[in-house]
Amino acid sequence: MSFSCLEAYDLIRFAEVFETRLAGAEEQLSGKRGLVREKEWMGAALELVRLERIPAPGMLERVRDLPELDEVREEFGAELLNVWVDALEKLHAGITFSAGSRSPVIDALFPHLKFPQLRRASREAVTEYAALYERRLKSSYVTRLLAQDELALVRPVLDQVAAAYVQWLACYNPAPLPEDEAAPLREGLITLGRRLDIAVRQARLLAEAALTPVRDAFDASGLGIKPKRRPGRGGGPLELDAVHADDVEAGAAVGEDAAAEAQGEPPLEEGHEPPEEEGGAASAAEAEAVAEPVSEPVPEPSAPVEEEAAPTPKAARRRKKAAKPAEGAGD
View 1 (cartoon, rainbow, N blue to C red):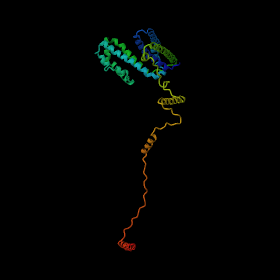
View 2: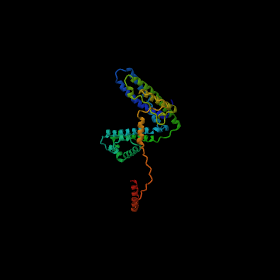
View 3: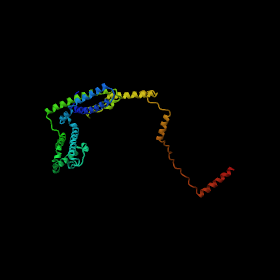
View 4: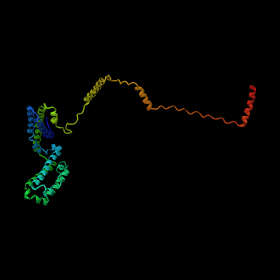
C-alpha cells in the first residue's frame, strides 16, 4: 500500500496516541490475577510500537519544511508554541528558585502570568506578547538585575527562550528545500509511516487477544480506533450508485411486506390500492360537503305587476246602476 507524505505524517501522529492507550491497557491488565500469557502478549504489543516510534520525533522535526505538509502547518506551530511557553515557564521557575518569588526580575519580565492562555492564543496575540517580553528583557533595569551572580544559572535559559521563539516563527515561513534534500526526507517519512502502520496493526491484534478474557476490556481501551482520513482524501461518505439504489428500494419494499405479514395483513400486490375502511366513503363525502358548501338556487326576478288605478266617483255610480238591473233579473 502506497502512502503520501501527509498520510505518513498522520500515521506517525496516530501511533503516538495508540501507544498511550496501549500503555493504559497494559497497566490495567497487569492488575488482574493470572493471565500470564495475555500479559506477555500485551507487553510485546507495547514494546513493538515503542521501538518503531523511536525515530518518529526526529523525523517530524526534519520534514517540517516539506511543502507537502503545508496542510498541517498549524499543528507544527501549536507544538512549537508549547515548546516556547515551556521555556518561559522554566525561566520563571529558575528565577524563583535562584532569587526568590519576590524578585524584582519576575515583576519586570512577567507582570502578568498568562502561560496557560498563551498556549491557546492566536498567532497575533503570541507575537504581541513576545514583543512586550523582548522590550522588557532589553531594558536597562532588567539587564542590570540579570547581571547579578545569583541569576547566573538563569542566563542559559534566556537563550533557550529566544531559540524556541525563532523556531516557532520559522515554522510559518519555511525555507524552500532543494529537491536533492527534499527527496530523501519524503522517502524516509513514507517508510516510517509504512512501518508504523504495520506495527500498529500487529499490536492491535495482540492487544485484542490479550484482552479477550476480560469482558469488554478491548472496547473500553479504545484500541479499536483507526486513523481518520482527512476531508477530500477518501474519507467522505460513500454514495449509492443506480444499481445499489435499486437494491435498497427493493429491500425496503420487502421489509414493508414482511411487516404487513407480521400484522396479519396480506402484502399489497402491484397495481392494487388498499381497500377503504367502512364508512370511509361516507366520511369522505361528508368532508367534501363541509369543505364545499352547497349554494341554493336564487329565484329569477319576475316581471313587475301593474296595479289597477282607483275608479273615479262617476265610474263608481255607473257600475252600481249597471249592477242593479242585473240583480233584479236574477230574482
